[in-house]
Image (cartoon, rainbow, N blue to C red):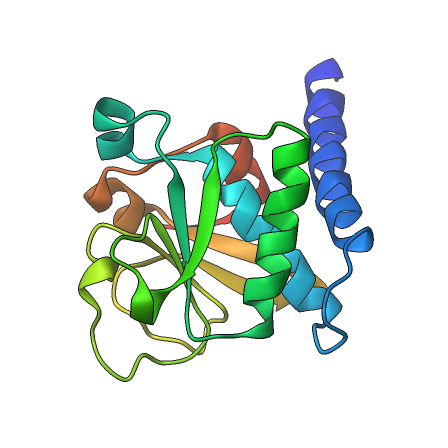
Amino acid sequence: MMHLFDFKHKRIVWLAGILLFCGHLNAQPSLTKEQKLKSAYLLNFTRYISWPERAESEPHATFQLCLQGSSPILDFMQELIAVSAVKNHRPKVQVSIIEQAQQCHLSYIQTELSRPFSVLSGSLIVADSKQLSQPGTAITFFTEARKLRFEIDLQVIQASDFIVSSELLKLARIKL
């Protein structure tokens, strides 16, 4: 019984942290609550997923989080990163646009890509919704019972050698 309480408690604390991030930032008014939550999730994904090549070669290097196009989420993500840096959250994250990036560790896709990008090779791809069919998508956002959720594709994760924390897996719907 205590173990179940601990899990629920950790999950509530994790989600509360995301909501606190979103509530204290001055983002553009065009951002919806769902976009703010997705941004907070993306930043937290960097803390609960390991990239083996990063661990071996540059454990303290800047983590490259790439967004598709110049969306209003870019400015909001930069504010989130500034807040998390003040609170000493690791790893150090830099946000950039996929179309201009030289390297991406995590890539957030919001619409179908018009052409392939070489920076997506080796990148963990997060899709904005189930309507996107980007090959190699590891995490997909979806809404269930008016709540934002995410699904993790374990086959993509295992094929790419990403290591996902059990804490993150507990919050996700698992696609086998």
